[in-house]
Amino acid sequence: MSFERYKYVVVGSGFFGAVIAERIASELGEPVLMLEKREHTGGNCHSVDHAETGIHYHRYGTHIFHTHNQEVWDYINKFTEFNGYHHQVLTTYQNKVYQMPINLETINSFYNLNLKPFEVSTFIEAEVHKSGINSPGNFEEKAISMVGRALYEAFIKGYTAKQWGCDPSQLPATLLQRLPFRTNYDENYFFDPWQGIPRQGYSAIFDKLLASPKIQVELNTDFFSVKHKLAQDACIVYTGPLDKLFDYSHGQLEWRSLSFEEEVMGVQDFQGTSVMNYAEESIPYTRIHEPRHLHPEKDYAKDQTLTIKEYSHSGNSEDPYYPVGGKKNKAILKKYKVEVSGQENLFVGGRLGDYKYYDMDQTIAAALRTYEQIRELA
Image: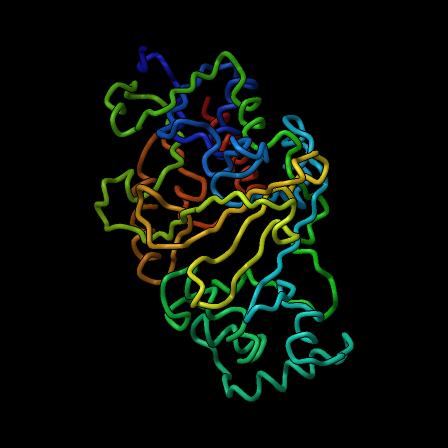
């Protein structure tokens, strides 16, 4: 096919790219070429029916949609209906199950106490005081300064070491911004007013986002292999790894990656929840997913269930999941952002493009903002 005729080219079909492509096609009425190196659309949000059990699952780890952004909620509901699922996470430590994030039930169960909500702060302050940490300078010290050493070593230290592949004392304290802590019995992982799982799965959303005949999706197509075929003045929306876009000229950004191990169990319910964390470093996987719990509205088989063990390991720009961050990567990222600012008709975004952890709603919000910039230049 002729790539040169496209004024708009979107690289990557995750939420950032798909939303922008949908907006350009439906609102501007312009043809869009979408290049996707995988065999499917949707990026890491891709979901399918499991061949053996029929259970719908997320191929790249459990994705819970949640948002407090009215604009995002109104937009995404044009393409799907949500089932109202509210996420709860449990963690196993020394063969005992606890609530996560750490809440009053976790504290009372761990310490064998019966604290009341108004007593928690004083108790935790005393635990923190024992550590002698007054000015936390890294992840470990920050965590201990929040919950005390005992809770940290039980529920945070081992899991974090597995997740990031290093001792938590080597990680920046800023990673703690994603760690909730409760002084009551609230078991909800998110507090956003709108939460749920798409009833027909995530892949169905992308099918609708990209349904316009004006959007040409090319799967199994690497942007870097075909970019010489694109029109020189094409507007490019790039959602891949930022360092790769500039051929690693300022160095490689560090990523963490994931791998998954599926297993069918001959029981209806293996763990009673969609996600079970494993806190101890001696257990090689970080968590087990059981996706049947994401769709309580579906009638799945009662004699088997699908479980998926998740492993974290070092990654690169060929298989990136989570940006590692830190001072070294921040300095490299700054140089690449200067490169982007000097390019005409180039828009970079998404988790990989921005080298930043985004939830799905944040990605959609960013895509809608970026589209407005593109529309102004149209």
